[in-house]
Length: 140
Image (cartoon, rainbow, N blue to C red):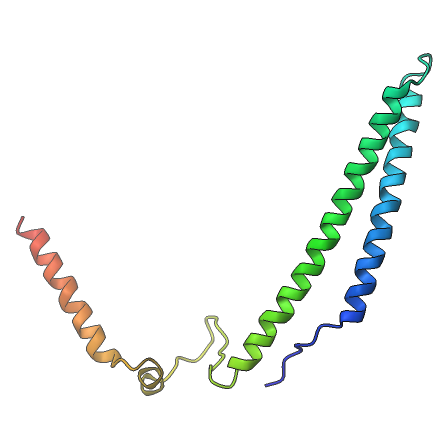
């Protein structure tokens, strides 16, 4: 079974670099947009240093949000690649089956060999334990 396990580090590096630029552009756009909005809202009030600080903070927060999202996306891509890499190493020993209503049952012999436990004996012991608990509950 073949699994796509390689992460294109070159593409992730480009994504990271573009993410920094995108965060910078979004920060500038948010700061400018905030100051424009404040000019529209306060038509007769002259802008002061408070507006510059608020626009700078707005732009910084927007840029940090975009940067955080980009960094998180890159981390998720790397984690997924690592998980697929681990899965590809264990795929030879693990039988991967489709899990839904139409999937065929695993043969009992195969399950017993894989787990090292006899399913029929374990099932009988479990039913015995359940019956004993039920009997104790009835007699109380």
